[in-house]
Image (cartoon, rainbow, N blue to C red):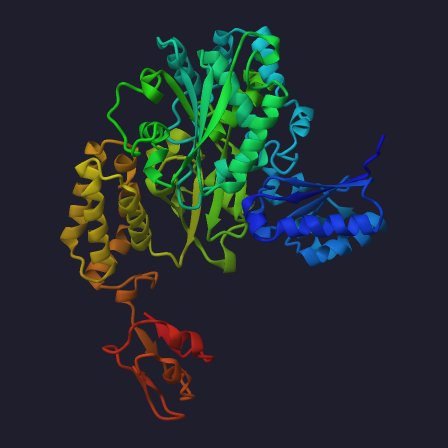
Amino acid sequence: MEIVRSHILVCAGTGCHASNSDEIVEALQKHIETEKMDKEVRVIKTGCFGLCALGPVVVVYPEGAFYSRVTPEDAGEIVREHIVKGRIVTRLLYQETVQEEGVSSLSETPFYKKQFRVALRNCGVIDPENIDEYIAFDGYSALGRALTEQTPQEIIDIISKSGLRGRGGAGFPTGRKWQFAAAAQGDVKYVVCNADEGDPGAFMDRSVLEGDPHSVVEAMTIAGYAIGAHEGYLYVRAEYPIAVKRLEIAIRQAREYGFLGKGIFGTGFDFDLIIRLGAGAFVCGEETALLASIEGRRGEPRPRPPFPAVKGLFAKPTLLNNVETYANIPWILQNGWEEFTKIGTEKSKGTKVFALGGKIHNTGLVEVPMGTTLREVVEEIGGGCPGGKAFKAAQTGGPSGGCIPAEHLDIPIEYETLMSIGSMMGSGGLIVMDEDNCMVDIARYFLDFTVDESCGKCAPCRIGTRRLYQLLEKITGGGGTPEDLDTLEVLCKHISENSLCGLGQTAPNPVLSTLRYFRDEYEAHVRDKKCPARVCKDLLQYKITDACIGCTACARVCPTDAITGKVKELHVIDQAKCIKCGACEEKCKFKAIIKE
């Protein structure tokens, strides 16, 4: 029997993969073989550890040394010093784990201390391409118990009592959705997983599929048993090649082990899964558009009712949840609904995964109990805004969400509280903005996205979002009027109330929330023709101050010859010629050029 004394875990999620983590794995293997320790040391490719800002990440056990920003060139030193000589390579350590007596627990660092992992419990812990490792962490035990000891209704009752709500949007109670699908009449039913994660900056579902695909396979099989379905579909973005590959491996392994296919666990229950790739349309995150796409039709929403639980895929009763929702199911069945209800708040049970990005130190993936405050996520887990900049707002819920201002930093993150201040939970994107962001420009950016992603089926969304975008372009371009602000609000209300699906109904949220909390910035744009954050190009002016020594550097880089002046004399900018490219400000070593 081989005794493995060290495990080297290397993040192989998309972010670290893009930073050459595969080459790090190869280099580590090569040096281990050179040292003739290949029977004692295992190198394992895992999913995302969460702290993407410090990737590529390598963790060595049993010491738990967390190495950050590792390169292939560092592999030799890690093997020679740490593995062979037992000396931790301190220069590569995540500094939050460094203490006088050695390396402290990773769970005690500010980034991880307030997290509680349910959906991400196996990410960064196991090899996602090895079913035996998933089984070693109680994988498929929930499925086995469900099929051999519990009835379908008992499963649904457990999910209902847990208080789990859908993690893909508005937070509909999961148990109730399962009950509807189970009660629907039909000889054929389907289970569908929505992995069409289209929000800008969101990568929660991708990371679960890359780091723990078997949890979704197990959960969908349990769901099939609970509602009486024998076939399931995973609708995944084609832009997620690593996630798709690992899903394919997981499904193949599950079939080989008898966890998918005919007579699962020796019972009379049959279930199998099929992967369908999406072409990157944001609207296909909407459930009826997603189902149309699986069927091979154009991804467009249809009116509801009937809801998918009654008439869904191929006009059959269909249960549809997103990746994160399914990832919670095995944990709840293994640990009991009572344990799940101890996490979170009265109305929002469990945890929520967020993709933390934007103007924040610790970009990455975090999972926190519902009710954790926005301040805790931004300042403690995220480490605050870089460069000492002041926090200005956070966008939750992607392009369909709203901007939460600093005055609401202490709001607990849960479904109802976010909606009460004009935002929403959404799938879990959380983009942080600092004092240098223009909130009018932010609203314009998100409207640009929704205009492009509208399927065009209904006029309120197709025409209304484009008109909203045109008004925001007018305002950021310096042509806005006070009347335009009133028009924005009226138009937002009309789009929200009359659009066919959730994309159009929520598209005005970034505009409404920024108008609500940052109206002074809108008024500065239309009244003073100024952008307070100095972002909107058409409202900027570059000026040369008395600090100019006449070095002529700015004049030499100006592409339009807008800067004139003699050597050792104060230069001036011809505003009519200036195209506001910023080259002069960047070139000036004396900070004599300011932006107003």
